[in-house]
Length: 359
Image (cartoon, rainbow, N blue to C red; front, side, top):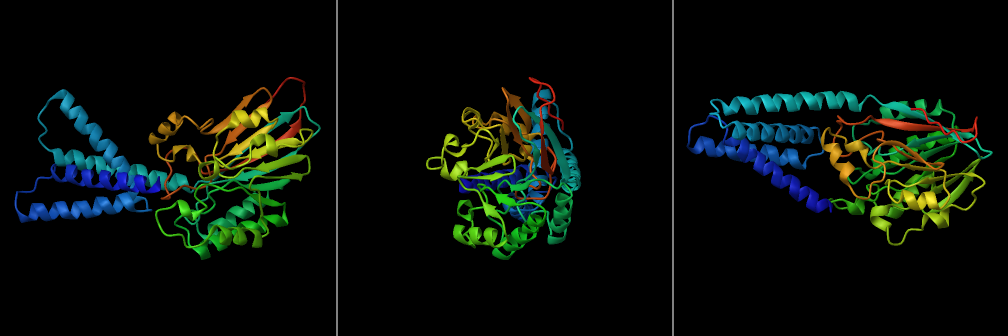
């Protein structure tokens, strides 16, 4: 899957280089051919990079193709096509710069959920860090200090804390810093599809077992098809859907004590109906990043298996919350959604039959 994604990006980069080249006012000859080679190198590099150059390329491609479509529809002579390309490039750069600023504006999203059960407490959910994309050890330490102020019953790391571009020292550093949260409350980790480097196009730099050792040595408990009781909560962490959908436990095998407030954590917001039928009260997920780049994030809403792309959904006493994630994959820019962590406060229901949620 990842290889196909990279090949598609490379093809798009090469096409965009050719499309830009033919709009430039350069006379035929060796110089024009050399310019094509340079553009191909630049766009190919941008299509394969893990920097904000990828965001610039995506927006530039969308804007330039839109301009050319309009030009063909109106059937007017285009006297300065290079100027259109320049304007599109400047707009793409501007949107990316705003996305870089917005990416660093991390927020806490609070939800208050009422329950008929004799249960109350607080959970902090953090997913999709993708360390170290847009995150230094200093920034992560600052974030941990903010998370400690929430004083929850438990911290939940909901997957994709690292990814295929993370080195072993960086992964160890990330979990060591996050492990400091256990001085305030126990910390739990649920697997994501990017944490396991075997999915990436690059050769893994650490094994799945080595990753588990890093996490556990930081004082973080792994919930992989496992359930644990913390205060009034029963927390059930599911194995990753993409990699283990055929052999992971069913939600009904994880939700055991329905007298507790049952929370199922699944990195991907899928199979929520099965979770509801199992008797869970709350499902927490991440994975989607709310698309990360506007307006392309709307495409993820068309994904047939994503039950809740972002935010909260409530039905018949069951609540599903999908976080936009605290970071982003591939590059440190976000023009869709917020870089967020989620704080869930569960309180006894004030009036029977009334369920409320605040954001």
